[in-house]
Image (cartoon, rainbow, N blue to C red):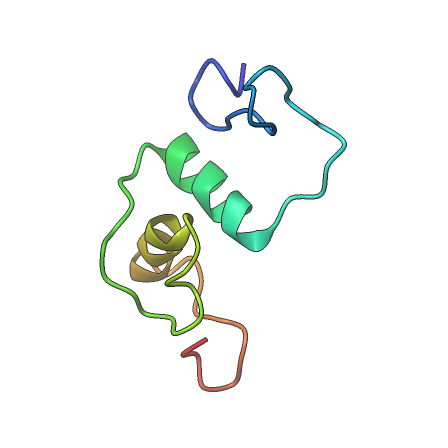
Length: 77
């Protein structure tokens, strides 16, 4: 169901495995949440450490919605 709904994708290059026992990163979870909520990833970047991840747009969407504010005291990372 998660694959059919577009919330998650395959976990290998061949696209034929789901890998439910694998650990999920914060970035992957951000993408899951944004897809599940039907939101669009955003282009700008609130955080200085996410520009190199394919999940940056989803992380930014969650930040703009107030779902996350970062992991340090300042809130910029």
